[in-house]
Each structure stands twice: as C-alpha cells, then as structure tokens.
Image 1 (spheres, rainbow, N blue to C red):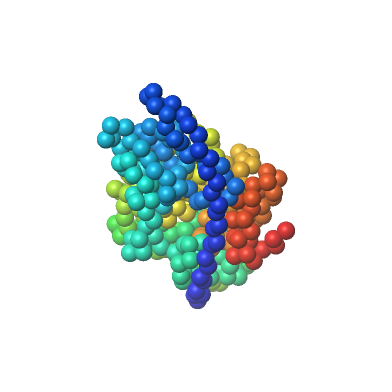
Image 2: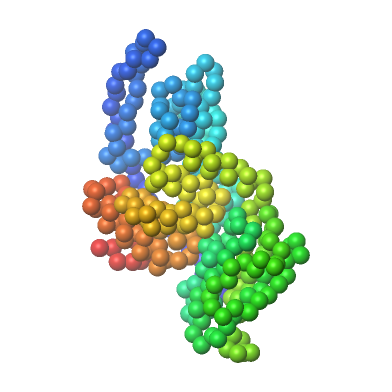
Amino acid sequence: MFKKIEIRAILLGLILVNVSVIPVWGQNVVRATRQVKAACEPTAKVISGDIYHQPLTKLCSEDRVNAANGRKVKILCYARGIIIDIPTDVVGKHCLPLQTNEGRGCNVLEGRNCVIPKGPDEENKPSKITPYGVVINNVRPTLSWLRTNGATNYIVRVRGNGGINWQVKVKGETLPYPQEQPELKPGQAYSIDILAMRGDEVIDGSEALLLLVPTQRLQQIEQTINILKNLQQSPDSLAIDMDAVYEAQNLVNESIIVLNARVAAGSTNPTIYRLLGDRYLIAHFPEKANEAYLQAKKLAQQTNNSVELSKVETRLKITGGKNN
C-alpha cells in the first residue's frame, strides 16, 4: 500500500556584509566578511587555492573565488557532494544543484513528490530498519527489522544479481550478513524479504529493495571523504561535510551513522540534530526525526541560534510533532 507525500522545506536568509581592507602582496584589497544574522544556505566550502578566502570558509552561491596566477580553487560543492576545481568566478556558476534528470531519488525536504511504502509505520510488520534507506555502500550489511507480535522466528531471504539467492531462519530481529554467503555486488539491486513466523505459520511479511553504489562512484566518495578527514576542522564540521557527501548520493544510512556518532560523543551543535532528523525523515522514520528535531530546537534556543531554530520549527511542522 502506498501513499504520496509532498513536502517543501522553507529556508529564509538575510545576509549583512561588512567591508574591511587587508594588505595582500603590498596592496590594499577589499574583502567582504559575512556577519550572519540569518545566513544564506552555504553552497560550498573552500578547500584550498583561494588568495582571499581561508580554507574551510563557507561560501554562498553569489560569492566569488579568486585563484592565483590562473590556477583553480578547490571547493567542496555541497549540492553535489563532491570536491571540484573552479577558476576565478562566482561559485554558483559551477556548484549547481543536481538536475531533475540526474535522479537523486525521493527527498521529502526538497519538495519532490515521493511514493512511499507504509514501511516501518505499518503495525506488526517485520519492516526493515537497517540499513536505512535504499542506496548502500556496504557489500555485507547488517539487516534489522521491526518486531512482530507473536512471532517465534523470522525467515530472511535475499535475492538479486551476481548469484545471490539465499535464505536463513533468525530468532531475533537482527541478522549480520552471513559470512558463508557471497557478498553483494556494487552497482546491483537486491530484494530483501522478511517473513514473521509462528512455528511453521507465516504471520506477516515485508519486502525491501537495496541498491549498491557502483564501484567508480564509491571510489569517488571515498576519495572525497579522505580529503575532508585530512582538513583541520572540528569533528562536528567534519560530520556535517560528510553528511553532505553522503546525502548527495542518497546514502542515508551512512549519514545517519556519521551524525549519530556525534550525538553519542555529546555534540551540542543543533545542526547535527537537525540534519539527523532530516535523514530519518527521508528514511521514513518520522518519530525518530521528530525526536532529533526537538533536541535541535532545545540546543538552538540555548545558544540563541535563530537560523537553526527557524529551520527546526519548519521541520516540526512536517513531522506533526509537538513544537514546544
């Protein structure tokens, strides 16, 4: 059974700019510094090569990068989740959002229409929990699902390309990928069937789809992540950048792992919790999303972060949770 959900996130921003004069190579150069009252949504982050902007500086689409001697500036393009080299120019000309025909799939926070199975909200079905989402990069994922009342065991069946066709009986609601079975293949699709059993009787069942990231794309993702890890930035900033990379590739599970690691480490950054809520919402776990949003709101209020507070309040309207 399917239902259609159409949701649009509302992001508002106001940029105030101060101008200061700094010496560069014996000249006075005008440099714009953004004083954020309600900042624009950053489009990119400087990695290296800009003669005015320091590495890790966040840029908006109208900002201009300046490369030395005809070279190029290396930036992380958030919209695409990749690191690109661009010449001296306005960032927005090069760091463009993915086009509709490039197919990033369903994202309820960006106003795209989504056909969503009832999944984990449907009562008493052994619906898949992990890996979150559909697209994954793990060839031996751990599977988990919701408990079905009255079930004494479960049968898990995995089928797909590359000679994958096996099933196993499981007592609990978690199954590490069996070591004796061949691993999933990059770039291939697999069907996951989970049957809840009472003895030999089938109580209920569910099915899910998993898509493995192709090898070439996986290598690009890993290279990007390694570059980000070598930058001198805070753990929260690194997690936010990694989330952008994974989100651009629909790797919801990886985003949730990274963000939850910062939650477990005791992060007090409301952005971490707001992004975690976004990923849970995309994975169709509105209750988990709402919990993360409420924590983000609490932290935003404690730090007088009006930008994050506005974003979180918009999300709470989406989840229908208590906004207090």
